[in-house]
Image (cartoon, rainbow, N blue to C red; front, side, top):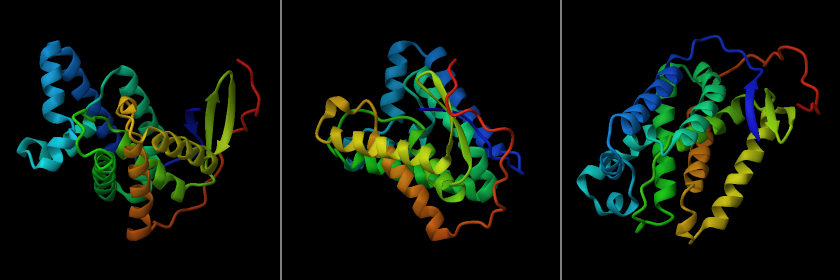
Length: 230
C-alpha cells in the first residue's frame, strides 16, 4: 500500500521536516553524483552502521548511528522514505513542536539502529537509511491521530483508510517480515528490525514524555470512493 496523502491539516509550518528532507537529498546527491563508484563504497563503509564495528568500539563507527540516518542506497530507497516523512512528519512536528520533534527524531533513529544491529552483532553488512526514524514518526502518528484518514493506492484502486488501520497494517508487515528474516543474512537488504525498533521507540517516547493535547481532527474534503479504478 502506498500512501498518497492524509487529510490532516497542520497549524505550524514543518520547517524541521523540510530540513530533514533537504539534508537527505543533499547527502544523496553528494554520495552518487560527486563521488566516483569506489569513493561511494568507501563513504558507505565509513558512515553507515556496520554492527561488528559498532559493538567492537571501533572509533569512527560511534558516529554512524547519526550519519547513517541521512544516507540511502538508491533513488527508490530515498524517495520512498522521504515520501512517508513528507506525509506523516509534518503532523508529528506540528503536535510536538520543532525542538521536541528534533529530539524525538534522533532518539527513534538511534533506537532503530540498535534494534537492527542487535539482531546480528557480528554482521559486516552496512546499514543506512532514514526509515528507522521515519518508522518512529509513524508510531507517534498512530498515537496522535488514529482517526485521521490516509488516501492510499493499492494495485489499481485508491482507498481512504483510517490512519490506525494503515499504520497497523504497515507495522504488521514489518513484524512478519522481520521474524521471517531472522538468521538469514541474505535478507538483510531491508532492515526490518530497524523499522520495528523505530516504531516502538516512537510510541514509547510519547507515552513516557506525554502526549500533547490536540484538537479533534477535522475531516477535509469529500470522501474518496472506496473502489476507484484508474
